[in-house]
Length: 248
Image (cartoon, rainbow, N blue to C red; front, side, top):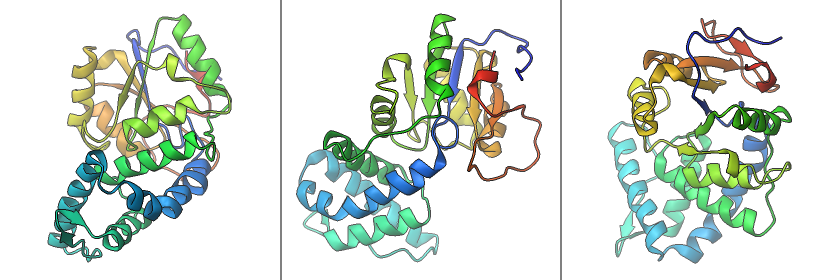
């Protein structure tokens, strides 16, 4: 079954990753465990690098905010401008246990996965309909962009290392939580501004109705993607698809 044509031409397709282009099982059973297992040796080896040190400073700020909110996180102490290693690992694990979207955590995870892909220990997955949809949309002159809570680095790595090959040449934009949280209308207004495209000409596809509600509030067209393994979503007015093959 295909969906009716949208009322205005779609210039840009904005896609979520987890549960939309990529099976949730891959994220939770492969990527997250890899990051959890390797975070301590990675931090120990790179703690003095300026790039990682920026993430650590952001983690310290996030930890202070979690303490202020009474969430009782592991305390992240500081010594000589660096978080102590064991404290940093404990706090990162605490964030992972809560599936936190904290930008600093996502940045560190992206760096861990970068190393895993380079070592050949990770190979990413996309649904079979994704590569052929990318090719179809490119032939139609559409722009394809990604918006995920994972860092831009993690997004690029995932699409560069799929079982179907490197798909990054199809993608013209990447957005993460630096543009804003995925359930806030202003984030989508910011994306439309960055793309210099009218919101009504952008189609956002996600497996989470809260994200779609925010996108619709910014004037985007929306589709709810229902994939195997996705958690059920509350009833909504968003049209539903099971495959990108259904998108005209």
